[in-house]
Image 1 (tube, rainbow, N blue to C red):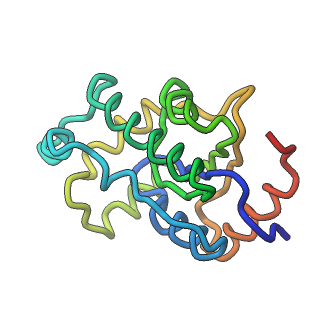
Image 2 (image 1 turned 135 degrees about the horizontal axis):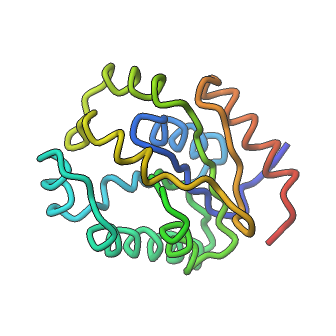
Length: 174
């Protein structure tokens, strides 16, 4: 079992996949800070999403840079952190690891029907269910050269934490 988290984790996936819930659970399990990437969106991004308009790459770039800088700053201070961030496209993930290449992605994977059902059961300040289809369209699975773990969202938070611990133990050190 992993005694201490040595690398930043980015919990990724579409809206409603459980990024914040799992990010907080991993943060508690490892005793490290948690940052919800949604809290770092510029207000213009929040307004756009609240109006039902998906973000484009130009909207996301400064937000991703804020997250990447935060990960790098925490790591420079000796503290790996857990961040919830959609990180839907490979180029977004590449931008996120620019300040910390050892970062590991925890991709919460679930089908559109299940995630839509979850979305209907929650209220999000600026992410309406109507934007979920655009997130699935943008989603690119983890690929070659990316440090990551895919986890089924149907598992309980405790099971997912255990799965992440086991997977981290099996990953080669960066």
